[in-house]
Image 1: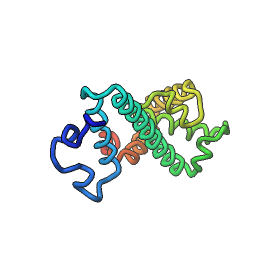
Image 2 (image 1 turned 120 degrees about the vertical axis):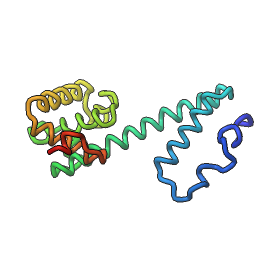
Image 3 (image 1 turned 30 degrees about the horizontal axis):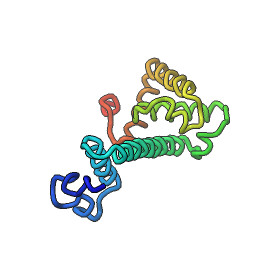
Length: 167
């Protein structure tokens, strides 16, 4: 670790963690990711580079899980279900539909692979592919349903699409 100092990682003399005591968690995570990416780009030891690579992969996994959890909790709340009910093995029509909407929104918002989304819902990736396709087809056929899904997506992301704003 002798080759890694504050001066090699940070361009300024002020440490970014100390610059703002009330920094948001996402800002801290992004700063840490930048540091790890610089470690990977540098000519440091292979052990340090391996650690940085593993740490970045783990951070991505954690961020993906948090994003998926936020989306699924929002969908569960919207449909008046518990998060556990959304992830349950139940195949009743209402829960299945809500789960499919949540899987679809997880894919649209995060862009994560179906395998990761499936793991979040304790399902096989092919179930996620089916859910995504099913919701996409219904959105193409039913303008009101498309608007509903776009409004949900807008509420989750804090943005509104052009079709939602026009309605």
